[in-house]
Every structure is written in structure tokens, then in C-alpha cells.
Image 1 (tube, rainbow, N blue to C red):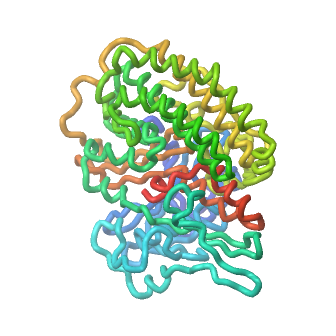
Image 2 (cartoon, rainbow, N blue to C red):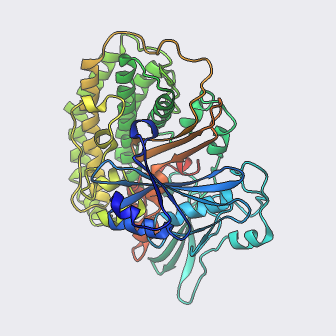
Image 3 (tube, rainbow, N blue to C red):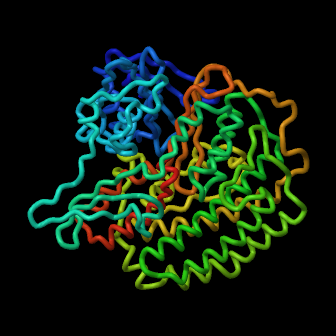
Amino acid sequence: MRDKLKNISEVILRETDYSVSGYHLALQATTDSLRGVAALLDEERYYLADMLCVDWVDSLEVVYFFAHYDRLDRIKVSLSVDSQTPQAPSISSIYEGAYFWEREIHEFFGVVFTGHRNLTYLFLHEEIDHYPLRKGKVEVTQEARNRLKSKLIEEQEDTFAVNLGPQHPSTHGVLRVIIRMDGEYILEAEPVLGYLHRMQEKMAERRTYNQFLPNTGRMDYLGAMSFNLGYVLAVEKMLRITPPERAIYLRVIATELNRISSHLLWVGAFLADLGALTPFLFVFDDREQILDILEGMTGSRLTYCHFRIGGLAGDIDGNFPSQTRDFIKRMREDRFGLYRKLITGNPIFTSRTRGIGVVKRERARKYGITGPVLRSAGVPFDLRKFEPYSGYDRLSFAIPTGVSGGAFDTYQVRMAEMENSLKIIEQALDLLPDGPVLADKLPKKLKPPKGDLYHTVETPRGELGVYIVSDETEVPYRMKWRVPSFSNLMIFPELARGVLLADAVAALGSLDLVIPEIDR
């Protein structure tokens, strides 16, 4: 692979220390060579894991992270563009997932991606007068405003446009999808985001590393522990801080309990989307048991901020292990059997989900899809196994996969993952050592060395990537969050095309989107 990349003219390659940077190869491309690099990586079956921009004032750097479903090999590709008239070639014709990322970078930094078919607003609105993530106040010109104006789906002969959301129960948050329909069949679907946008990445540039900790739980409020964990692990890696063994195992236990809680809520909400309300009551009963356990550990029931850079905010009490084991017993002996009778074998449920929202491996790769949606297509890609962190390599668990992809397979994968999480928790409790939960002699001011780092963890929805650029101060120079809901949403317009509206709702629900993490 390296030799093939070297054959592309105007490309500079540099091997990197993965243990330090989180990627194996850094590649500097030019506007003339970028599409050739992307085409070669596509040919070698890499997926586009992330795409972002960094403002160096004198220039802008567009950064692409590529990874592979079959082997651990992360490649960073950089392209430097002029800060006054930034232009870069679009790779959205090669990687469909880039279509949305390029729009995001365009509206937040002003980079024009030549060849992109629709550089209109995705998150922001027409009253924005400057690019929010630029280091200085760079105004949006009138020409740029004309280009950014929303391109709504237009009604045509024998068709009509409707809004799904932004206030609709099946979107599970303030998500709007503009749909053009022919009768009850969807011809075109266009997501409109930004109704909950809070500029988390801008806040990261205004707060110290410790001050930003509470923000992580506000993005994916259903999987806050995974976001906490991804962030503290990234900062610990930059600072060469090793948390105590007890903290490592307690982090795993808390994160897996939170994963089960998230999956339970998805099951209830997904069934409610399809018209079945009874399972919603059962899953919330089980979820309350988890929230009671985590409240005793963290003092919170939803937007957790218990992990600290160097360990945990506090230790568990004596009741925690027994409470957790009682919950494991309850799920195994009673609840999973109930769900199999109530949902899995229900003929109405299976008829509403089989063959709906089918995502094949190759289409998933083109969009950078991860998590249960990818695994439902038969791809055994789980970062806890594939790129282990926080002691997961010491624990034994399988990677559940589906057969054909689609809504029914994603349901089965998530149910199997909950059983897996119970096994992980049980092993972590057995291995839990005595000792402190916070590292000794932590620096009072956290100032990571100059450089960048990309770190990933497996959230309930898929791959979370945290990219940090440090300039040796207490405040990150740049922080980008690669959230799985955003990547998984990208394929919905393709899944919705040509299907009934009711089936599109089922396909959308199967993706398990959390809108605040998309609108980070």
C-alpha cells in the first residue's frame, strides 16, 4: 500500500508512531494529487473515517482520516489550502460520506470543494455573517451567501414535498428531513440539521482540558460514558498518564452498563416507531435498574461526567458489586427471554423490519458506517476488539453480526450486544482490584506536548473519534469530534429512495440516531 501511494506524484509520506499519534501514516497531498490518493485508498477498500479542517491562520489544513474494516491501519491525509480563497477538490464522487463532511467544512471554515454538487447550509442558517470555526472573524461574502442558501426539494408534476420533523416522534430529536413523494413512495430525501447546534468544538477552543469534560456527556446523552471515556483516554495518551488498574475496570463496567441502557432505550423507541408501545414500558423498567446503579456510582442518571483525566471522580460503595450482579441475573433469567417472546418472534415486527433499511458492506464502507448498523451487514468490526483500549483486550467477548443487514438484523445485533456487555461486566467485576481510582502526582495544569492525536472508542452507535491539536497550552488549539450518528445518517437518503414512508421510518429508526451528537 505504501509503495502504491509513493507512486502518486506530489505526495509526501511519513511513517508515524501509532502509540503516540493514533495513526500509522501521514500523507501530505496537493490539490492535483488528492483525488488520486482517495481513489487508490478506495480501491484498497479503506473507508473515510473522518474529515475536518484546522485553521493555521496563514493557511487552512483539510484533514482526512482513512481506516480499514479488516486490519488496523489508520492513514491521515492532509491538504493545505490558501486561507483567503480556500479551495479543495471534492472527493464526494469517490466516497459518498464526504458529501456531508464537505458541506460541514464549507459552512464552518469557508472551504469551497470544487466538483461538489450542493454546497448549501447543513447546520447553520443564512443570518450567519462569519465562519464560526475560523481563528479570526472571516466574513461570509455575498457570493458565498448565494452559494450557501438552502436548496429545498421542489415539488414537480405528480409529486409533492413534505417535512418529516423537525418535531416528529420518529426522528427522536429535532431532525428535519425534507421528502419528495409520489403518492406514498419516497423519491428523494434531504436531511436538514442544526436545530440543536451548540458549537461544542468552538467551546473546546475556549476551555481548558478539564473544563471541557462536562461537555462530552452533553453530546450523546444516551451513551455519555463512552464519550467521557474517549475524551479522557485521548488526553491521557497525549500526556502519558496511566490511570490505576481499579479505575480502568470501573470505567469498563460503567461504560458497558451505559451501553445496555442505550440499547434498551433504542429497542423501546424503535418498537414505538412501528406502533408497538408495550415493549417501551418493559425496557424502561430495566433501564431504571441501570440508572439506579450508575446514580450510586456517579451521582447522575443521564449526562454523566464521572471519568477524570487520570482516573475517576470517586470510588464505588460496597453495594455496587452486588447491585450489578443482581441486575445481570435479572436480565439473563427473566428479561431476555421475555423480549424474545414479545418482540423477536412477533410476526408483525418481523414483517415490518425484514428487508427494510438494508445496508450492504460496500455501501457501508462508502459512507463510513460503523457500529451495530455495520455489524448487521455481517462485518465483525468492533473497536473494543479491533483497536482495544481501557483493558478490553484482557476480556473475552464475541462480536455479534447479522446476515443480510437491515432493521431486523440491527435489532438482533443490539440484543446480542447487551448479553455480551453483561459478560464483560461480570469479568471486570471478577478482576476488579483494590487500590486508588485516581493517578498520583497529576499535573495541576494540563499542557500536552505540541502535536496532534486521533483516538477512537466504540460507543453504542459506533466509532467515536476524538482529534486534538495541541499547541502546548492549557486549551486545545483544535478539537474535532467524529460522531457515529452523523456518519450513519449519511446513508438514509439512499435507504429512503423508492420505499414507502412507513418503511423509511423503520429504516431511520434502525440507525439509532442521537441528534445532539450530530448537532455537536
